[in-house]
Image (cartoon, rainbow, N blue to C red; front, side):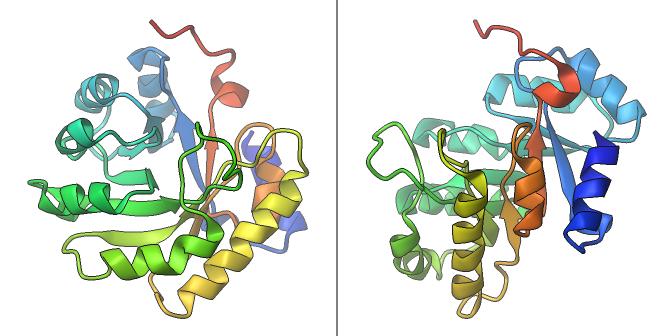
Length: 215
């Protein structure tokens, strides 16, 4: 996997140091995260509070934990107890609750971009709505927006999707200079994502194999 990531960065004229590999360990046993930590990995992705918190306590202290699931209001305070990066902020109300949480100052956020607005099951802010969303949360304390996140829709060319979000990032960055990162690309399309500026790629199955069924 590291060879494929390195090759994709070279082909895109980028530096490997620009890419953060987030190993998606959700539903996998903590022993997998512990082995990966011993092999040098430091960024791990989870989407369940209980699982994230328990793994955080059993993996090295300098591991960085990323929350990648859909945010639920009642879970926000719990998320702040273990996650350092949230990849799926898409609600002004949720942003306000994060701002009021005890240790929200430790978190960094990606705004989730929805490229399939017709699908009710897809979270995220439309590209057209990004500027307004950012304006509404601009005054909130401890809300550090570092970038945009997206998932390429199934059945479409991922390059087109990633290019669209990269252009959106460049536009919003003019008014919000801290928005420099792009979380996009998974096992099946991370090479295309790197081509269009991804800084964080979220990979699970290509590293850990088939995902165990969730209870």
